[in-house]
Image (cartoon, rainbow, N blue to C red; front, side, top):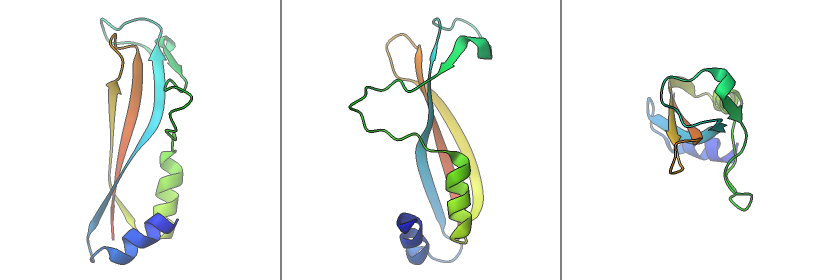
Length: 99
């Protein structure tokens, strides 16, 4: 909450605030060679236990921003692999808010 308050207080009117976070991690049962179906996806944390990455929820962050009087301006997700054989993936979410 404090982070959102600080941004809101320092942002000019109609200014944009871009928030980036990891929304999900997942693995595929096999290396994709074609478009996959949801039965081939296992959602689970795949980074090492000592890696302190927090998985955040889109809904919670939007609710928090709306409480601070931000307006949702845009929403984008990017999925990328992060291993050598494209079996481990992260979903990065970007939320843009307007003051």
